[in-house]
Length: 127
Image 1 (cartoon, rainbow, N blue to C red):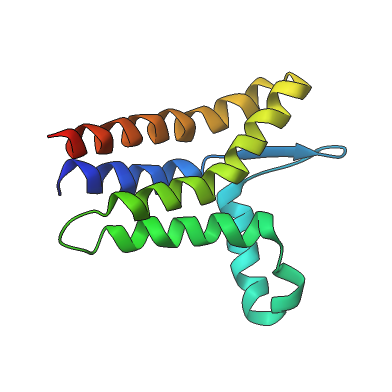
Image 2 (cartoon, rainbow, N blue to C red; image 1 turned 60 degrees about the vertical axis):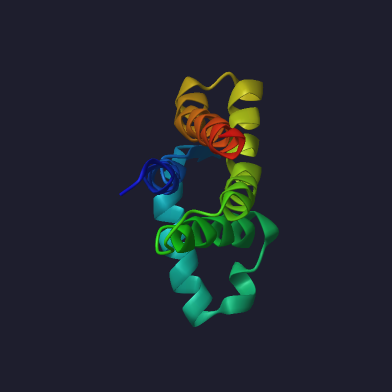
């Protein structure tokens, strides 16, 4: 596996680490919420349709598609990062506003990997 594919695979995995807390004693990781979303998409698709659920899922699918091609498309990688980034940057923003270190630290791996991936793709383009 070449470096761009590895970076995209790790981006997908890091997107599952997002953590949210709401209400009294309620919290979950994004992977758990995503599995619930996928089951709702099958049983009741209209209840699961929301931009903050569908767009990040689409981003993960786009990054997953890049893993199967011969070469990784920079445009698809950027699109996947942007789609997932909408949600995880919102999670980071909420964590900063609430001064919740668990939420902040759950979003940082994706954001850091996204920056590293973008810099790597720009370096490849220059060479």
